[in-house]
Image (cartoon, rainbow, N blue to C red; front, side, top):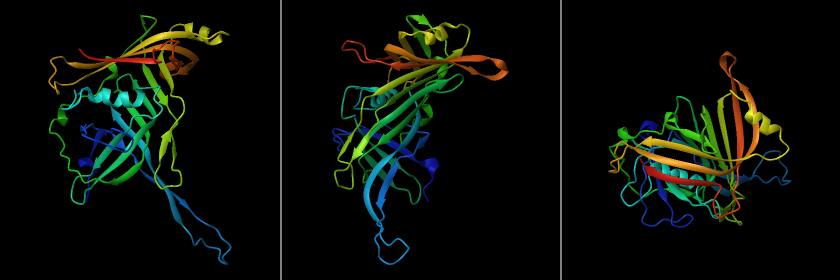
Length: 310
């Protein structure tokens, strides 16, 4: 039988929604892969002289579900320029003004006797959350909606360098507001596109679009001043520029001489939403401060991302 310990997934970027050409395989470890074909059925209830249902018809199938993974600094495989981390972050948070979100095909390989290959095509991000907290890893949770599920005819072999992969750690995270260092104990960066699949009478979706890309940033820190409480009481809006920096070891995989893959995310117009007190153990109080990421009155996006190796 198939063994989940031997399973892995392969990410590939599509050239158009549901189609792919000359794909580059990204063997990115995932903690959980919950994407499956969700079937919508119709049960008719005609007056046919019986109390039990006699009709069931499949009317639509939409692949959707969640993916949970860490960020990995591994540098790109042959044929690409994106590190593992950039590949996923750009898919989730990049190109905010694009109506048709970028899509990927993901192949699930279940190893062992009786194992199988199946792939989900046309997967687009409906919602994503990047988060981290003291003493932990940087984690990425992605909710996706796609076009089709089918059995894969391809063959994939897992590279033998998996033991060299290293996740981004919260210990290497920095945050600043208006150019001043701002120590935090936790952060959560979230985007939501609200994708809506439309099948136009067919079984599989023919259109998959959403609304505005809404981004929020929530940070926590041990409370030692009342600045943001005062902002919260104001009748005017408080807006800030903030920079979140993340980095992770790439262990030399990919050939670079430097040690870290680094993301510098500049939130160009953060509008404060709430500033709440949270009680943690031993009576300590934390500030939980939430912001809406807004687009400035310029060509600049709400969040500008710069990648480097350092």
